[in-house]
Length: 241
Image 1 (cartoon, rainbow, N blue to C red):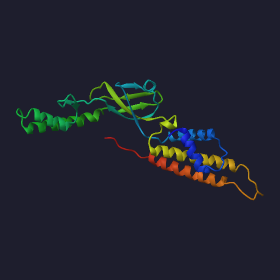
Image 2: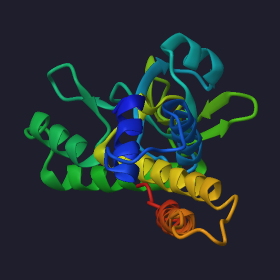
Image 3: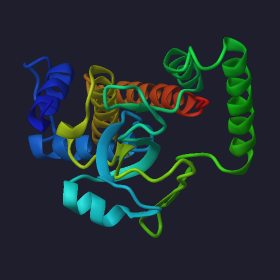
Image 4: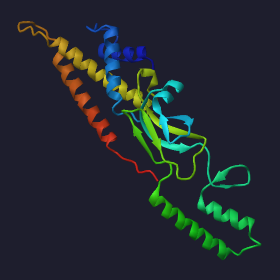
């Protein structure tokens, strides 16, 4: 969605296309951009970027070269497999495949018991090595703009970095879920703003009244509920194998 679409939807929900609003379109645009900054605290949809493999990657240069903004790094992947060739030019480090490949290509020289013992030895070696160093374990230095990566199975020529983008425009918000969250945050902040405007002065002897108190209550209630939902979601952790 574009910025003007957010503005039109907010205006329609507050005025029904009939009533007049104290806020200009430019005012609502500022509220949407303010809400976008708040959304950055919770936004977790990721994107991928490829980089030359190195033990220390300069994230500042990576962002400039790829015209991206990184909020945080989620994961690092090898862009190339490592291990034993599968016969078609590809490689793999899956131990079960290695055992099967060895058995298929060396059946007449050794019996299955030999390869079962070899597989057990290989599996034990992998378990031992994992206690000393974890391949592709990484540490992000946000203050220094560096990404440090551990390569325990050899360094590939490229790595793929999964990252959470830093949102600087509403067009960068991806997915219906997050566009809906941004719209609801913006609507809640707009209600609060209008509520404060309409309750600035009170006409005690007037025969009619404004809906400022109602808008203020609705906005604060909606905003509190949204923040609690997003905070609960942000507290979930997902273990990586």
